[in-house]
Image (cartoon, rainbow over all chains, first blue to last red; front, side, top):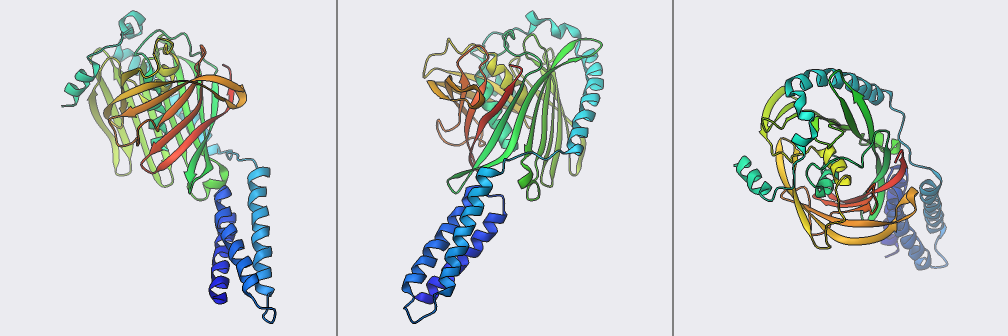
Length: 135
Length: 254
């Protein structure tokens, strides 16, 4: 029984370390808390004559992991990295779009921009029209 | 992230089809935090920005609606998202002229361009992705068809005050070369925490569509401030890969 508890506590503690490193936020607390529970159970299952050093280490480790995970969540603000490639892509897209719009607007005819032409009222038969288009 | 955008757009479909734009102006920027439900806990995944700007061509002045989504830096090593969705619309009524979608999610990349022609009731679609280059197709559209971005703004331009709780409207969205009929229902009004705007009374709206991209009944919700600007402050979505939410983080130029 004690061996099972130790193995389970070690497993969840290792999972807790992995979760604390990964950007999973407070989800990392799930294995850490489970690891802590099993470590405490191991501690109390250990008879006075047997070594309690491993359960103590696991309890300390899981408590430390809890602090790390909560600290990361509360003290470190989520930010988006400055991505020059993405910025450049947006800039290029803007330029390209304007050029394309010059051509598209010629093709589409500027009368499209007469708002009266485009001021459609709600059409109760729209869905029927849509269905017929899709068929 | 694609699903996130379509959810946002579907949320936006409540709008009347093409009423005059009195709400959306250039120079506005809304920033949202997108969170995803993992094992019952919400984890912040990405930042979604929505910006408006005027664009002048030699023929006309258009309103440029730009939406970007980028994962927080802590996720970039695992699954990097850099999505750009943009529409060029008639500023008078928000009807789209051109819509572009540039998706980069992990190793998945895709670019789509839609050109709307309401006279011929046709949208020309150009697709670029792995193994496909400049594939052109045409989609028949209705006069009230919107792209994913312009719909979001069209929603805010709608007169929701005439809609009774329980009342619904039906709309059309063009996405991935397909038209989606969408039903949006007003659930009522609620006062919620609107982040940087403080506590605000909001329209609570439920969105459903004839698509497998939305799950559950009344589980895809959006809260819009119940004022002239109708700013989206909170959204909840339920899609095949899980549930999540978007929370307004900052608002400028409103």
